[in-house]
Length: 426
Image (cartoon, rainbow, N blue to C red; front, side, top):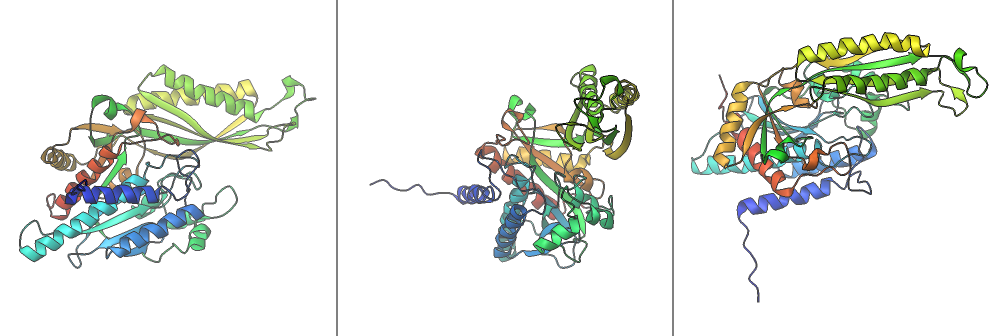
């Protein structure tokens, strides 16, 4: 007879986390191992209700604010502000199951562990009593796939986007954010908790950490980004009979913009990233020369001088494309942000925590935008990464190893506990 293995408390906690992660990944699951749960869709509502039940079962007060951010409040110090910890659970149309969602579930489990430690502390008079409370957050519409712009929930919470403007945004079917949230019953009448600090953990969405054998990335800064919405105006015509020289083909102009974006990135190899991620073609008929194309184009760099040079080059190309394609290109700035460091004292606190846990770590930058890039402009914020296998992201093949996932939960727990104990107070 084989004696069953006796699991340690940490092993049991890790097993519970991985089991919950598997359950969470079933909401909006796709056939190739990913998820499709865009903001305020049925699948998003299902996973939000599941998260609410998970939090409520542990004694957390679950609430929704005016833009639909989902909060799980753990109040140990009545009236004190909160350490906000979390990420987002909405996704791209066919996406990986780790992006964002891992950070929310890791936040919840970190808060569960901290709550247990606080009980021990109160019962035995040992440990580190809290001076701040903890709020787990599932930010609304971080991805921006159904409603633009991205990072909507944290932008409203931090005052960067007006609530009424966000609620009025419509998806492709003409459904507004407000209507979508009301249909789920997940729009509250509250502005959210008072934050003192913030922490977020996320999969890297790059391959530098895996390449270097790093378990924890300490994010010290973000890349700058300029994100534009371009509208290419042409003129409808018959695709067969219209003389080529007479055409004002909006899709041709848009295609030239796509090529220009890639050529600009190639002019700054490894320094500037560019992309076009969405095209909307009108009338999108097989026998009509398009008269209007909307597209989103972005440029990103850690070097603001290089970004400015790339941006100038882009707008030079816009003018030449208008002439070459005989179209008019309207530019609308979607949003942009500069290179902005995370607070160095937060990076230092995280480095000490990683060292105490024996986790291999290094400073990294984030190329992608995250809700923490908004929060760091409001309160001191700690951003952490765990490795992504082969750097695959926004793809159903996205993957992070179990051992890295649970190491990240342990790291986040330590960081949030130290923040709640007042290690950065004053």
